[in-house]
Image (cartoon, rainbow, N blue to C red):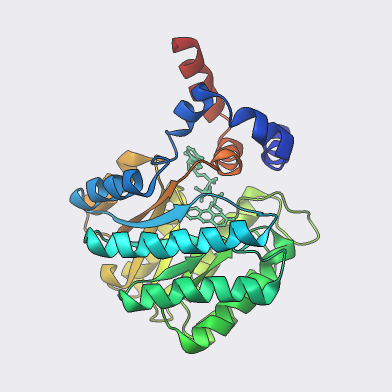
Length: 304
Ligand code: FDA
């Protein structure tokens, strides 16, 4: 628990980020969880995954931008990416974070950036998932999803099972038939807003999964946890919910055997494929989820 909190604290340290990003070794290690630095490398990774039977969602790494130029550039990159997904005929949608689109700078400007991406996705019959960040941004993030969904159906939300508010949010999203990705939640949250015990988060995850699966909307169950996956499968079987009406989602590089096993069993599996050079906070959150990953990093360091 202390290790997890420390790693999440370090994930937010700008100076440390700038220091670590300079090391070639660190870049090499990040490749365990990041597909590459360029769009071309990411598309190649998706091609490979598609051949193995997976769908993908591409994420241009980067968050908490500090000026509008950076945010506009990020939106432009997503637009280019959607064109490339189409040109290369790969099966991938995109996931984006609103703090990369300027959420903390100017709300309307941020909405406009995401709208440009969603419009391009619509042109290619594709889909945009808005990732969920830390709890001070939950309201605004959902506000953007609801606002855009009124005009574009190809946009979806993410709900974090660790937040007390999530049941109510799921209800509201389902009323509008908005597609949801359910995850446990990756940020450090206080007991004022979030369950702290794993069992409580897991119980809420199962509860929300059931609400989502019964809705008839195509949702994503995003977890590497065998118990959550089994609970989803059991519930779907009991309720005669067909395998094609939902999907499992995994992060790139995590529990590959389990990913493959689900595909073999005929389940839809989507892999979240990050790319880009701004991998530090993403990478540190992955370390926090499983501090044993630090041993993997250390092993690679001493192998050099
Ligand atoms: P849990 O953390 O309980 O882990 C269960 C088991 O999975 C572990 O025992 C271990 O075996 C394995 N495992 C989990 N994490 C691992 C890791 N990093 N490395 C190796 N093994 C690991 N969060 C968020 O706040 N906003 C978001 O938008 C998203 N988006 C998102 C998309 C997708 C596709 C996924 C899979 C996850 C997210 N997340 C996220 C992250 C999510 O909230 C959560 O932090 C991680 O998925 C870890 O939780 P698990 O459900 O895997 O369970």
